[in-house]
Length: 142
Image 1 (cartoon, helix red, strand yellow):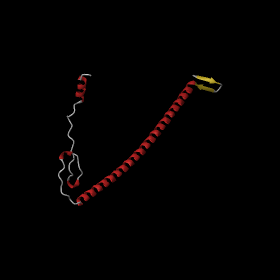
Image 2: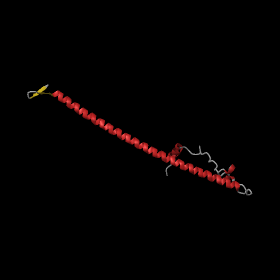
Image 3: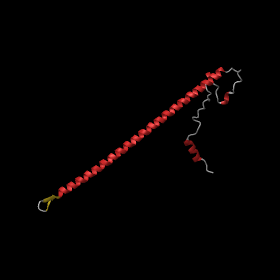
Image 4: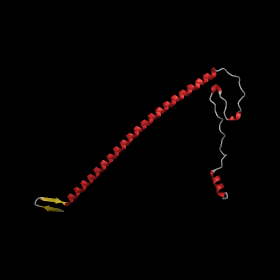
């Protein structure tokens, strides 16, 4: 369908509508591409921030491990000094043995630290939840 505007100007209506729709589609695609690029930039910046934080946490853990190693070395050195002092000290006559029921074992060979006796096994000494719930339901209310 063609319309004539003046002598030499003929414009097709279908052609104008097609060009307008194409321009609108291009604008929509451009907007989508811009939004996708912005989302990609945001994701990359979040990833970079996460990497930076992970590096910082890794450095903190490394520092704490180093501090713990120093503490362990100092503790071992102190234990060695105590053992050497005990070995160098004159031995006193042995006193009466300590009572066995106090829950602490005597020092082991070469001045090993004192250790507690293990706790008794508690498995089977408690009632199940179902039994407790049944007892509370069957119990008379006061």
